[in-house]
Image 1: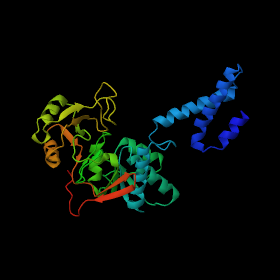
Image 2: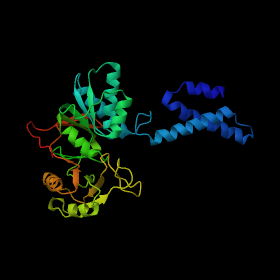
Image 3: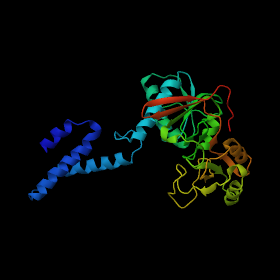
Image 4: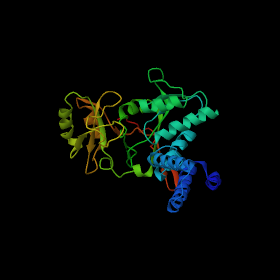
Length: 315
């Protein structure tokens, strides 16, 4: 055990439980082969290591063993705050696995004193809870109707910087907050870029529960959405995977349809307009002409694409 302790002491803290467990397992295997008892302390270290490894594999946050995609999300999330958030601003905080890191960065910079007098408006209950834990002062649009900047991720970004959002089921709150911002900063990794909206990621549509099957049929019949296949989201509203047998319920108490496409949508703006005018639709996941700038994390770092001045539609 003394040898294990010396080896563990030389390791980075995040890796110690895993490698300690590996060495203890090796020690235990040798002891078993020689029919020697394994010390209880060794078994405890091994168990702790297993638990750490299991948590690290499942973690999407800062657990010390991030995937490459999570590293990109952290990089672009932090940069968005470093480049676009200043003292005294009112900031819209997005929802999702990339926006998580932007919220985290705001909390870090407030705690260190690098940022002062920040007020934030969250776009979901999940983001509100994260911000509260980080000590970020919060408000709503009722008291802060104009935001200096909003920062959020996206599920798809086309060459014209039109977006699909709502994979996390928060697109209604995201849109009402981000449409109130002077600058809307979109943060993505390069896997979110696409040639055309539709096939790359299903388009979420929040609908009222009343007669939801009828609403789905009406949506499927819209001319600008030709070929779409509406699928009722089941289980958790925070992702579009089937992880339950009951309809997913949004923060607003509504259902969500995910519209699947096999071909790119010819006119996303027209599709957004037709959805908006459909009775039973609360909000769709098209964000047409809303992004001021898109920060894109890739293998060569973070690049930036800006929308031409004067182009803003809020659809």
